[in-house]
Amino acid sequence: MSGEKRAASESFGTTQLVKRQRSDADLNGSALARTNGAGGALIKGGNASTLSSPVMELTGHSSEVLAARFSPDGTSLATAGMDRQILLWRTAGSCENYTSLSGHKAAVLALNWSRDSQVLYSASADHTLASWDLNTSTRIRRHIGHEEVVNCLDVSKRGEEFLVSGSDDASIGIWDPRQKHALDHIQTEYPITAICLAEAGNEVFAGGIDNVIKIYDLRMKKVSFELAGHTDTITSLSLSPDTQTLLSYSHDSTARTWDIRPFAPQDRQIRVFDGAQAGLEKNLFRACWDREGKRVAVGGGEGVVTVWEAASGKMVARLPGHKGSVNEVDFSPDGTVVASGSTDRRVLLDLLRAPNRGNKHVIKYNSDHDDVHVQQLLTTIHCHLNIVNEFLVIAIIATAGLLRLRNFELSDTQSFRQPSPQLPPTDFHDVEVIERFAEGKARCEQAIVTDYGTVFKQPLAVHSTSPMTGFLRNGYCEVPASDYGNHAVAAEVTEEFLGMKPHDGDALMNNDRILMLGADFTARQGNDLRPIPGMKAGCKWCLCTTRWLEAFQARDKEAAGDKIVPKIFLNATNEKALNKINLDDLKAFAADK
Image (cartoon, rainbow, N blue to C red; front, side):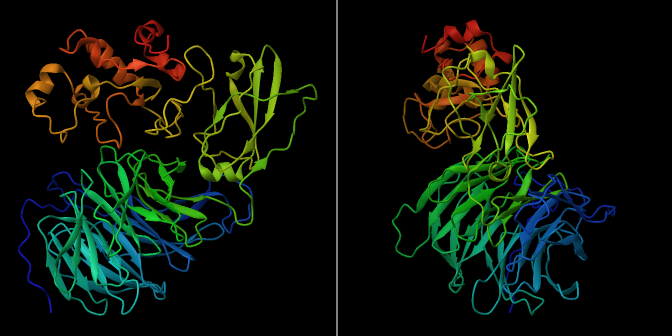
């Protein structure tokens, strides 16, 4: 029996797959050309994985890739997107595209597998769900009942298999895959953008544009409790393998974990993971767990996949390579590979760790220069996890005609440092990668060994670990190739620069007084740092050079004067700050003169 639903509001459109108001453009449009799917190795060379390369590029989609999911048995990967096509790929060898599924009349926004890997379920902007038989590559059934874009779906984890879906018509659909129409609908107040079923199948977790995760009892069809903490649209919900923890991601650029046990403490939030920016596109970015529940990952607007340890919150990898927003990521069942689908029309498979290999390797000396002086170099190599585990890098430095070579020991840390007091400060410039273990183009921040130093050409000092700062969230103001904002300035933020938090409740600090004092300078520039956990006046933070320079140049026009300009720690400020800021200006506000 289909539950009664209110008519969809005309304000809900069917085109933009984001939070912002939807336009009237036609998603169906004209037919897009579809290329033949093909897998390509970005890094050549064998390894212990079943992949033919540690980084595989899958091409075949003619438009944005919005969904990517491994099958439960790990043998296949399903991808889909704006071109309305669902492509199936092998997950071993060259990862060839072995079939495609078509039938939706608009973008495919979400995918999920049956527990036996024989059936694939899809949700689409054409207001329908579909189930597909993978043995015959045919559609089994269209599931109709939603009146607007279907953003998300999930499959029951035990018992009789059923589906739940969330739509822009502000309803949650409950479906039997054997039937065309929904079993029931739960009507809510706002569009649903993320959904997840509890392990027992009696509750469903739903998030939407009201920024709150609501837990609905499927039998009572009402809210059991809520999880509040996000400050923007919730785009993803995922249940941990042990079924005790819920992972969420939001347009506030944070991932969070929540304790969903029946008798958990009142404050159910466990941890906040920052470092994955949503960007300006506001797509429905999907986060995921690995199959052991030890790591979580999410994409974002920066074109990077970010991976954290679930228990500690430590960022263990940032995987660059995409040229557009990364919309969905998924771990393979054995946890060794992460797949990512992007608006750049590509799918990338990154090998995180080869089976039966340790986490540390030392390169072998291989050079024609017998007189090379082997000496430790003060340098930082920024690598994402698969490069750290799989690639052995030789770096040389040219200084006054003398070649110095360092045998780097690579570990599973994201960046590492080898201090050397006897090495002259000028010797850690002009670093060049000359040999890689895999003899290919490694995607390791464009495989550059970066010459990081202070404005005085000295080794960078740690700036802050509480809150954990830096573009790479490792405490240093380091500027890898992917840091287009140049977060080089080691600053201590002031109340006038940062602004009072809107919920601080100080009656004197009303909006008029804040503006009069200039006490929210950075927020008014469009870069509000206040939502960052632990951020307050006196915190040390790696600022982008443009933001600090704006404060410096505006100090004579602001009522707060010099107070809006954060103090500088020169021993932790990256020399790349000098690309935009004069050294004398930095010295004028230095706290460590």
